[in-house]
Length: 254
Image (cartoon, rainbow, N blue to C red; front, side, top):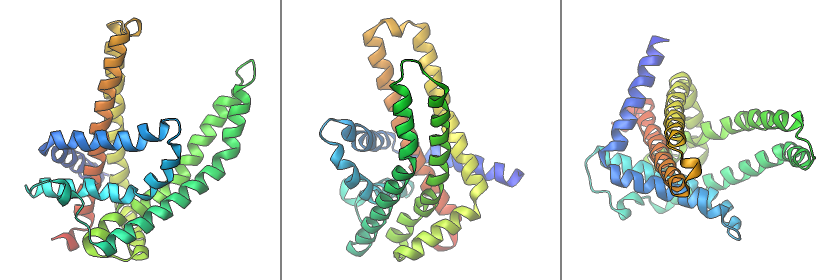
């Protein structure tokens, strides 16, 4: 247990420090990710772009990973360097994205009955307990279904891009790598998530005390600050992904 705590502490600390090395670009990349993956698909008429964004997700991951690798090595982080992936590996990353797309469709199909139940319950005049029960059911099912794809894609894009692993070999190695360090990875992720939630909660509390709910301008400022914190959090997660890769696969990263 002590070893798990020490490793989690080391990974979280190193992830935060790495994300701060080139903080302006870190925030720019995090903001671009929010814009592309959260804001654009929510714009009416642009929801059709979501499947393409899922397919491109492994490439987006490697943009972040390349950035943190170059930052750690104190090398130039221009856009051309961030997209430095050979054609064969780029093709495999797209295939990995296609797998992610089909898996996300599978998750949608499994959760569809629960979503329909929530929509039906929400249309009732009185709010029933069915809504909360179905929300819990969806959350639990989503977490269980998401774990395999998270394990399959945590290291696989990096193994493909940096070590020329084949698609299946990269996925298998990613599963093995995550299983090997499942406890410190999970604990580190929970620490980062807890930190993010705590900062957001603290900001909401401060703005509530200041009366932001009665001031439109203050409300927009709060939303803007929350987006900045989310951008920093997202970038730090990718930094954490790179740090764990360097540790778990240190025998082939030297």
